[in-house]
Image (cartoon, rainbow, N blue to C red):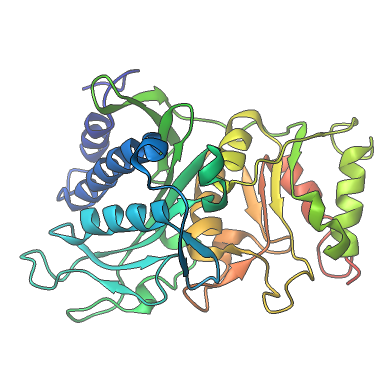
Length: 343
């Protein structure tokens, strides 16, 4: 079956599998389960105000953030979909402090894969109807034995087999890559299917938009302050001032950057001394989005090092992030390399 606009995501996955004669279908099954969970979560997100599942639960997660009711719902749906007979041995979720070991009674054990999951990014925006999303990545399991271990997740981003996100907005869209191009599928609620709407997405090499929370500027390093100052003026690669666009939902901000170009950043700051490495999580946010950006022709760095080459040290490790058009990310890095930035 040739790739065509409007084909379902499951058809596209099956067609991609045919390109690998030795494929067993296990990896395709994982992607199919992600698609299913995305449909279920999308339905609840779209009806959240009607179903009275908005608001916080009163609990905090391992990150110290307020847990929203939809956080819990999304986390449960994705874990359930990917735990039973789905070739996943171990899951790490942003919402769970420890690893989640899938049902070891499954006939498919031990699973060959590990999955990192941010079930509902942008939780603080849920109650005001701003676009939110799910971020995920799949890695090949490297540990031995019946149970997966943290070693299966603590691999550099270059070892990711696939990464993607689902954005729940004016329409629900699933974007993913297996390292051979980035493809987007839009959910058609009338047929209940994700349909191919954007094949082989390419990020512009340079953009005119920067996305950063300038409310944190007093806490930035001097290098970050000088970088943003240059973007506001004409002393940057485009030769003219950039426009500021900041939503505050990582999935939404990067989704815009993927299509329109520019750069999104969550820099290192001194606002939270207990989080000296930045705010965004390497495994659940930075690394999957970096794989998508690079597969679309963009780039992602912590200011000094390529995100995909960072060796994770812990499940909930945080990093600074500069991601977007290749020229814009390189320009940001020029203000943050060793010997340039004054701390």
